[in-house]
Length: 127
Image 1: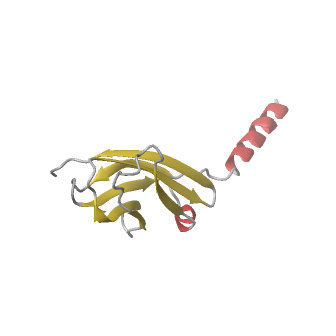
Image 2: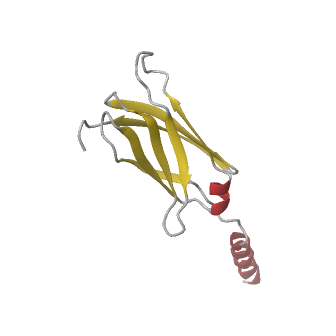
Image 3: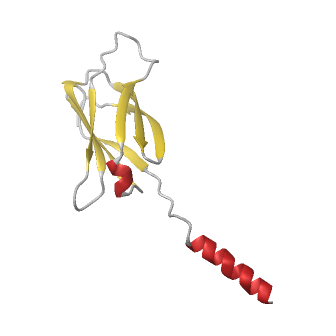
C-alpha cells in the first residue's frame, strides 16, 4: 500500500513540474477588401504567449504554381499586439489586387517552433 501511495505521489509530482506547452495557432483569414482594391486582411493569433510573439519572424511568398504573367501584389505582414484583445497579423498591399484568386504561403518562425500555412483567397469584385 505504501508503495502505491509513493508511486502515485511521485507521478503527480512529475506531472506538476512539467513545463507548460504553448503552441502558436492561426485563425481563418478575414478579408476586408475587394477586387481592384489594396489587400486588407487579418489573421487572428491564438494560443501564443509573449515570448513567442517577441521572437516571431513572418514571411509571405508567392506559390510556384502561379503563371509568371499573373499580377501578384507585394503583400506586407505586420504583427499587431493590442493592449486589450488578441494579437493578429495584418496583411496589406501597396498595389491593388487585380486577380480574383490570390495564393500565397505564410511562414512563421519563433523561438520554439515553426508554422507554414497556404492561403487561397477568392476575392469578390464588390464588398
